Amino acid sequence: MNDESNSSKNILHIPHYRILAWIFAGTALAWVSWALVIMKLDPYSSMQLALPLFFVSLFVALSGSFTLLLAFLKKWRSHDPIYIKHIVVSLRQGILLSLCTTLCSGLLVLGFLRIWNGLLMVVLMMLIEFYLSGKDEL
Image (cartoon, helix red, strand yellow):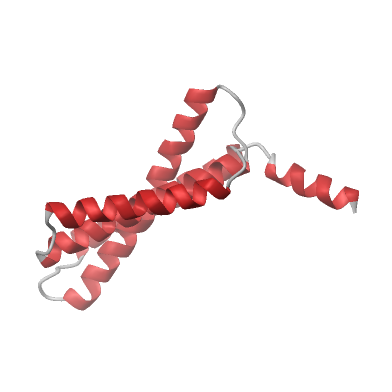
C-alpha cells in the first residue's frame, strides 16, 4: 500500500521536458492545420465545413500556446523544477483562456460580441479558475 502511494507521488514529479515537447509538437501541428484552413477553405462556399474546422483548430492551437506560455512563465518566476502537476494547472488555465478567446471570436463572427459579453465571459472563466485552483495543492 505504501509503495502505491510513493509511485503515485513519483509520477506527479516527473520532469517536464518530454511532456512539453509533446505539447509543443501538437501545438505546432494545430497551428499548421489552422493555417491550412485559412488558406485552403473558402468560408463563403463551404461554411458548414470551414467555420467548425477554423474554430476547432484555433481552440487547439491557442490551448497549446497558452499552456506553453504559462508553463514557461511559471518556470521563469519560480526557478524551481516544474513537474507534471504544474503542467496540468497550466493546461487547465490554457484551455480556459483559449475557450474564452474562441467563444469571443465566435460571438464576433455572429455579430453578438459586445463589451459586456466579453467581460462576462472573462469573469466566468476567472470564477471557474478560482474554484478549480482552490482544490489544487501546489
